[in-house]
Amino acid sequence: MIELTMEATGLARSRFAISPLHEVVATLLPWGLRPTPDADPWVARARRVLHRARLPLLCELALDRGGYVPDFLSPHPCGPSPTIEEELERIRCTPPERVLSELEALREGRPRNGLAGTQLPAGVKQAMRRGGAYVARQMTDEMRRYWELAFAPHWEAARSALDAEVDRCAGVLARHGAARLFNSLHPDIRWANGTVRVESRFQIALPAPLVILVPSLIAPAPSVAVDPTRDGDRPPILVYPVRNSTATHTIAPAIPSTEMAQLLGPSRAGLLAALTQPASTTQLAARHFLSPATVSYHLGVLHRAGLVTRTRSGRSVLYRRTPEGSRLTARQ
Image (cartoon, rainbow, N blue to C red; front, side):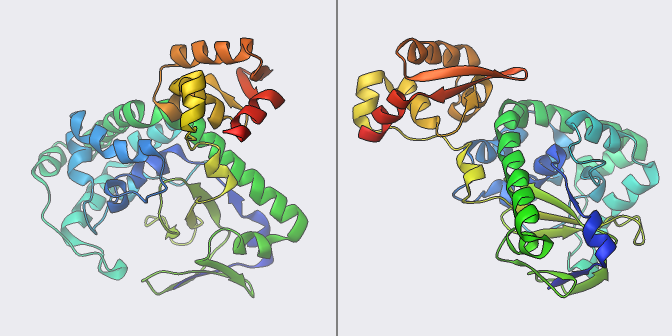
């Protein structure tokens, strides 16, 4: 059990953050290799991309079973919504001595955390001989490449789901207070008498100046991360999975009936069935593994048929089913 005790001030200062880099690093952990059954399809594809893209250091650090991924690869979010470039820059600027120290922890393990040491991979040892600054630059380049290939095409849809989760939590906080909010995050997270308790195989109890809450589409269970380079200055991060909720349904591709697929064609039927919530061309393309041009063409056909409408929202054009489109999907 992990226990985080906060005073009223810490509770008032606790906040949410959406971190693209934490989602990337989550796929380097064992559940990235074996994602949960309800994970989005791109999560299962990420590890395959990792090994095909010639990213030697990341491949050697990715875990197939228990172990340690260096903490400098997932720095504390610097705000409520950092960009991937902001987070990658923080990796690049990691002090060289911290980089080497955390890589040495691969060999030595972290006994206090129940993590055993292991032999350093050959590529990691070779990179360490060139210095911590070199490793930080190389890791930044590889993480950026991994992001571009495996995550960037799907991030808009994933980000929409995470934003929806934060909006849900804001509603719970406004209507029911902080205690109900913490208790609504996950069955393994409970708030009582000033303490957040997280089910874990570790036994840790520490005071927290505040807690940063990070929803994740990849993590299979709640976890707590504490910056190992600070003694209480940095707040702990509580990562928790977003599963089986309205938020994740907004990015899950719907499966149309056979009859509707025969009527409209499989691609158009799938797009119409997916519009349970407003979505952009980019979001739909990522969900269905189609090009934006292909999705735009099919949406144009559905629009001319009176089955969808489109409205501008900021820089995006959002598509919605019309009443006729909803009646058609309901009849199938």
